[in-house]
Amino acid sequence: MFTISEARETILTFQELLDSTPREACHVRVSSDAWTLAEIVGHLIDSASNNHQRFTRLSFGDLDSFPGYDAEPWVAQQKYDNLDFEILSHLWSCYNMLLLHLADMTSNDVKRNTWRTPNGPQTLEFLIEDYYKHLRLHILHYQERLAEVRAYLGQ
Image (tube, one colour):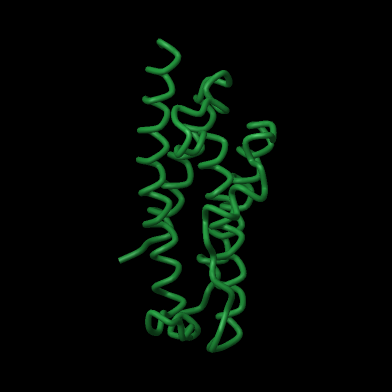
């Protein structure tokens, strides 16, 4: 079961990782099909943005439809690798503090509101929990990519 304290800890853990990332590593592409560290953070900003809309709209009532999110084209279109890493890190941090606030302020009576997706119904409660699970997976992804970049740079 999801708790706000676990979500807060997840955010703080990732922020510490972002803060400790060597700046020379942020924009290194280890292979043509691998996101840079900046692009991973950009993807997580996209995820926060999409989920912000879902959380807020579902708090008003059930949803019959909502646009999907396809990560690869979004990251490619926004060219996150051309943006200063400090800006990305700060935006990610602020956006996630907003989502944490929304999750914390969401009343139990609206957590059962449902988004009817092509893959079946998803409640607001499920989406909030799933968001933080997704973030935890990307912390591992980021750590693995950082290790690959360090090896690539001979660090």
